[in-house]
Length: 281
Image 1 (cartoon, rainbow, N blue to C red):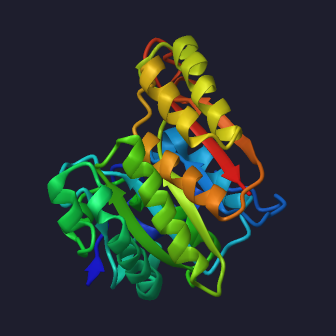
Image 2: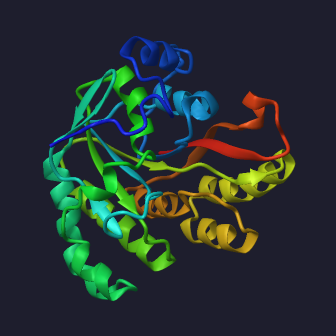
């Protein structure tokens, strides 16, 4: 199937020409590109988080496939939802799903299902799910930047509602196992915004603690920090899973590409959302 855009005209411009111009305002065409195993990238409206997302994608040497893993905001679909075929469309183009890798990821869960924390999750993780993706924005807003640089790269769209540490580890191990079984480059994008609706100073303080754990390649530490410090990071589970996977894939370091809050755009620092762009290599 062709997955149609769900948030065009809301999170980003609805016309092809306007969206192209919008993305060009945020990308850095002269930035040096690096081979990247994983990354954290925000998913707010482009007017707020586009500068961070643009900085991330401008510095990535594009792989054959992006595995896009994000939180499920709608509550629709299965706990772990993968689309294994078709393509995703936005006003500036479309991207095909890497069916081979998507199915490898699903199949890699067969050895893990008995350990999952919820009874129903074990029986659903091995099934494709489309419904979770139809209205979800966390992956869709990555596409304008990806398509700007390449319409040939493929994607594997994944959303998760599972957020315990054990499941994040299992998801990361499954991703790493499937990626190791390919003969082409794959980059994992964890879609996440940072603190929500805190004062700017509080958001920056809390977000720094979480970012420091990501930079240390410490998935357990990230999870514990989010829990202990009440960091309202909506994609902490995808980020934790990405870190587990990246370490399995040989990651040695991470770097903060850009951080800002919505207050830097709106001028209202009383209640902000934080945005961090981080690459893992």
